[in-house]
Image (cartoon, rainbow, N blue to C red; front, side, top):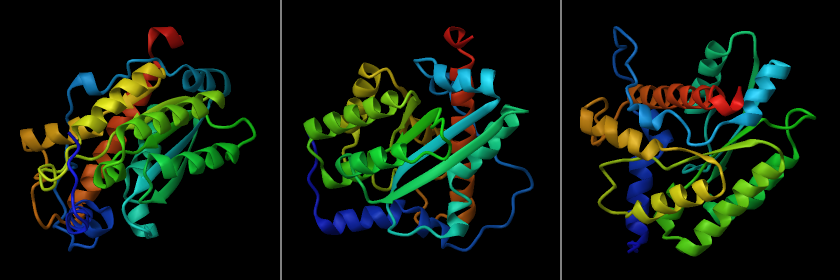
Length: 261
């Protein structure tokens, strides 16, 4: 069952989950060492091989990535943008793929659900950074649809259409699930949307990076205190750095799958 919530609860959730809100908090003292980013292996290998990305790296020594994501704030400052996971992803991919020209292009759309995202995604795919187009497209969605209580049938249909559009451009597709937060999880039932994401992504032959379950694992293991009502900027940066690093591992594992060799 999808929980219907009032505007005040949506506003509260936005305040709790919005990256800009986290980044605005006073920074915590610098840690003596970079925080580790643990995650079970089952979250770090895609169910489908990333053939186009592997081919681009093998034959052209380049990798063109588009990160298309819905964000909760209508504006993201350059300072915050530099600390979000796409920046960490770019750095981590470059480290893991020495000698490869890695380009990560980011397109953020404020408060866009699957329905609003689809035409914008198609527009982004039609204007790539290079004539050869993107080798890999990462589509982050779900949070806005959970908050709005989007009809499940419409959600699945739009998701399918988006993945098909990515594949039509001869690019690999990775779908990223929404964030997990124990502060708002009791207010919104993300379960049906997560199930729709898993089923649709599998049906369309795309890969699913399960950020929701990874963050829940961190909360349960005490890696991050995601229940903190006033998380500092350092936590925002650490969480996004870890997501970017694990996503890079996910991508390189998918490129190294036997079917891509």
